[in-house]
Length: 125
View 1 (tube, rainbow, N blue to C red):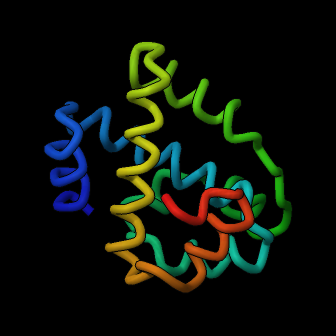
View 2 (tube, rainbow, N blue to C red):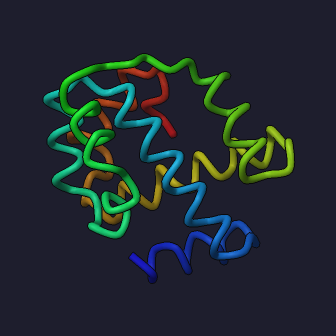
């Protein structure tokens, strides 16, 4: 997990603690928007360092309820919590986090993560 955060941090030129927060927020967004069965599958593929960021109640919610958080609302939250209100930077954080998750989970191109992204209308991230 630390190596993924370090590379993520370096690629974006942001502090590791901001990278960790961004990665957690992006993971939460993907899990909230996935169907419960896909969220369960994604949870099992994510590094434990990421899943440990979520409470047991959050994990249960991800695997029982699909929330459909709008992308614009998520980018606003990400920009406010990680990027000093910079929405362009938040979009870069999102894109790089998704790419890092694809690499870490072995889901480049096809698979569960790509399916979740496709359902969000963001399959080409």
